[in-house]
Image 1: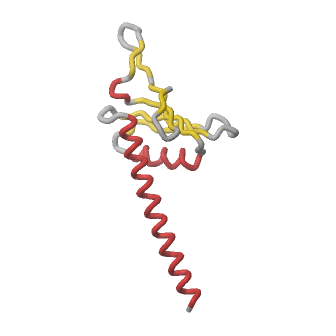
Image 2: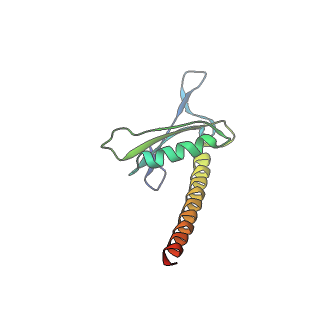
Image 3: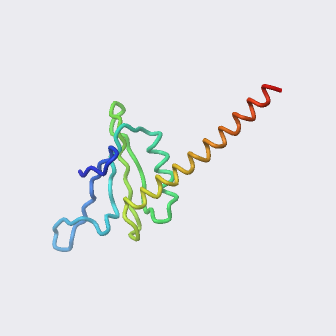
Length: 118
């Protein structure tokens, strides 16, 4: 496994070549990312956003064991982009979604506070 920074380790998927040898898959289309100190909350959110990405062929996650705080996130792309690129884009989209929710929540709290003071 390789360290991809921020507590994320990756395991490159291997494809069998015609001569029977193993070689890294083209353009790193299939990869498993191990995200430490996380659980179903992030795993399910990323899976959802990844599956909506047009270049995602497959996205899924597992939590190896309830006592382990890590998520194994599997990403396979259609080939135009690497799994790292698609995951980075999905993380950006998820961050934008969280920002929208936070703004709506803050607005609702302000409305509630205003109503309480009337």
